[in-house]
Amino acid sequence: MSKKQFKFSTVIRVAVIFSAITSTTAMGHGGAKGIVKERMDSMKEMGDAMKVMGDMVKGKRDFERSAFKQGAETVSKHSPKIPEFFPKGSGGGVSEALPKLWLEWDQFTSVVDRTTEEAQKLGELSTNGADRRALTKQFISLSKSCKSCHTDYRKKKKEKH
Amino acid sequence: MSINTRHLLPVCSLLLMIPALADAQEEQSSVTRGEYIYHLGGCASCHTNGKEGGAPLAGGLEMETPFGTFYTPNITPDPQYGIGNWSEDDFIRAMTEGVSPEGEHYYPAFPYTSYTKMSQQDLLDLKTFLDLQAPVAKPSKEHDLPFPLNQRFVLGVWKWLNFESGSFQINQHRNDRWNRGAYIVNGPGHCVECHTPRNIMGGLDTDAGMTGNDNGPEGEAVPGLQSSNHSEFSKWEIEDITFSLETGMKPDGDFLGGSMGHVIDNTTSKMTPADLEAIAEYLKSLN
Image (cartoon, rainbow over all chains, first blue to last red; front, side, top):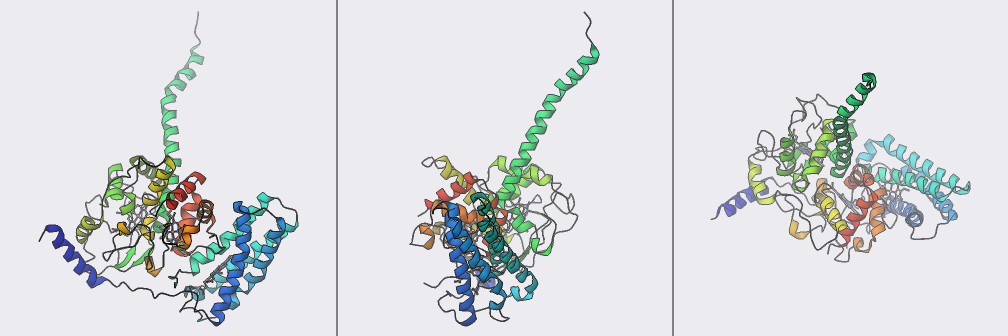
């Protein structure tokens, strides 16, 4: 047995003994029901609104101030409802919500408030004749609050194909 | 003719100062470059325990892995508890060979497996920057690993099988931008550490490329970044990639999060547009 083969088998043994490799069960969003489905749909509507504005910021679509007014309204309408969509114990299964959000509820709801405020600010700018630069800047601030909550309280699961 | 020495003196001392000034300038630009490398390397993602309000670079972040729990060490310039006493060689050896100044192996939870590709200049600039950060006199916490994995010599075997040291090699058939992207993704940016599947020993399965990892760090699913196999990602255009790395927004309006959220906050949102484009060009070329 060569040196390399010998060491390889030793390492495999070590790895097998200690591999607590727990594989996450494959799950997608297909199976979501009840409140979990409702919150995913609500999030998805915010996502659709962000996509339209994002495409304009990226220059993939003509810039229209009215789209920012509409998009901001959609987010302002859905965001304040987020806490209702996360009743205690509604994690697990197909949900990507991290259980710690219920332990850090005050922090969780403060990101919700921030998101609502940023969306309202975007709405105001879009009706006050703000230019493209100002709208883009505020859109980015709003984006940061979506990303911030997804960073702290959401964990990607494998999609079911 | 009389020369007024009162005027000559300041001129002379000015002349004497020029080399010192040039040194100071060189040091300043090394610090600025080093700060950028620090962002590229995402050192703060692991060595700053932001969640628990820890001081910058003082470590203590808990990292759960299938092999046990790691606590990141203090890498502030504190001479006793940090790396303030390290020479340039000590630092380069740690980053590129995964070996401590005492000659012990590091666990690959420290991604020296990617940092080994960093250029000498980038590493020296990074050290210049780190040396100027605030020292924190706080000891590093011991890792919590089962026997025999708590024996560092075991790592010698692991490294022998899973680690190849050596700096980044330029691909002559590709342009500068592609090579810059490849350098960042495989080197300082260590994107491969999460986006490439791992073998049973926790080593990177480099043959598989960046095809993703359904069971990434802490059980998180990491998507692939190859343009092949009809993945959702293969439909992303260059500006979709750069925009997502800047803001977190995916082309469908959803937002990235989890550990990638930290990568965006600490690394990609701080990159120059040119570097983001280089990464996008490189990723689009992967099949």
